[in-house]
Image 1 (tube, helix red, strand yellow):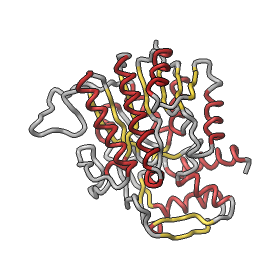
Image 2: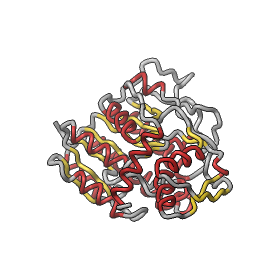
Image 3: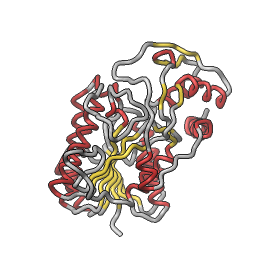
Amino acid sequence: MAPVIVTGAAGFIGMHLSERLLVRGEDVVGIDAITAYYDPALKRARLDRLQRYPGFKSYETDLADPDATARVFEDVRPDRVVHLAAQPGVRASIDDPITSIRANCDGFVTVLEAGRRHGLAHLVYASSSSVYGANRTLPYSTEHSVNHPVSLYAASKKANELMAHTFAHVHKLPVTGLRFFTVYGPWGRPDMAAYLFTRAIFANQPIKIFNNGDMWRDFTYVDDIVEGVIRTLDRPATPNPAWNAEQPENSTSYAPYRVYNIGNNRSVKLIEFVETLEKIIGKPAIRELLPMQAGDVLETRADISALQRDVGFAPSTPIAEGLARFVEWYRKYHGV
């Protein structure tokens, strides 16, 4: 069987996904640029973990370079790709929009083009819950409008969905987008809430709680997310024969194209998230209450019924259990 390419393999979700694929007997080729958005040592530690598996190979490649990307695809000749590589972060896209667009849009179109040239059986890519932007109807449904992004990061992810549909239409490339909600767990990103809060509590430093903690997020444990990604990868997108151009569905098409939400379908209040961490760590946080940030939204909650129906996705990890596993990893990794 041809190997699976996982872009962003040195990233948080990419490492977990690659390891799960390797455990089930797949050969995996990771592509990652190892950027300095956060500590590259953590990214290399993730890659070191994957290098224990004989079926893993990695390339340090900038996907926005079309020639370099084409060479990797020519060398590997994959039949499936999971594209997770991106410049993450809403605030990063506000501070440095050029880098975000280069990584998220230029990088994605090179993967689409390389994928169609190699006749991929399926390309699964990471979109984001941020595409819902100014939408206030909960839970977020893939049939809702996503025409009012509130950050350039969100706009770049909507652009990915549009580019994916174009390749599905023109080249019949099967593409599935997954709108990730807030993912947490061991080996997580240092700029995400679980990591930021845990580090601050251990260091007796204040944690920044925006909108006075009056915010809700659809926190989803990474193992649940990875299970959903693999189930989706195993079910290539197909045309929807019932799709009607006069009453078009947003999440399917006459082309082999699909978009799903992947989350927990329940929201946790940010202040409750903090309190759960305090109990697990065994010490209180120093709380710095701040107003809402630009680009943020009050609540996210995913309607995951389509993914449940089509691939049997069923997230099951309670927030207290998931955070306990994260804190256990954090203590070990940082020697706390």
